[in-house]
Length: 163
Image 1 (cartoon, rainbow, N blue to C red):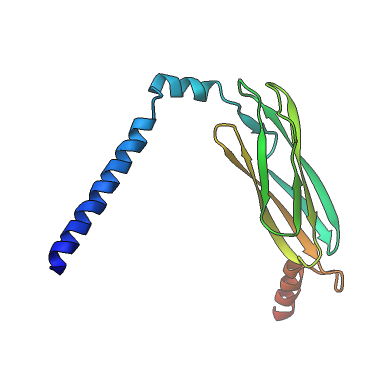
Image 2: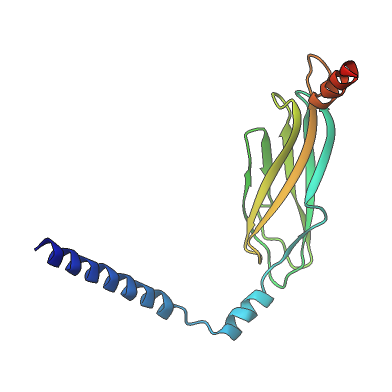
């Protein structure tokens, strides 16, 4: 009896999966030519630079950088959201669509408090562009406000002593 129920259950599940896959396929009424036209007419985001180096900072410094971009696509660009990697970073985005050929910026602010050492952080931009995600990054070496030395500087001093 258990084998019969298990077999029946398997048939029902597989049948349901097949039915749902067919529903997904039938919902796509767009031809390949239509989808190509959508891609060709989509907004496109191009950044002047996708990475930035803040250089050497003292712990507690707050630094800001503007990542400038241009909409090089054929329709208005909407920045949907911006995600940062940790609480030490805040990013702001344009609230209105960016027209074709227009420039705008993503402003990234880094708070170095408690971030002694070499830092590499990422900011992910979500938009209606093709591709829909762009990842920006920045680096900073943060010196301790107590010692004034970075981790690398301390390692260099230790190497000199050991010679």
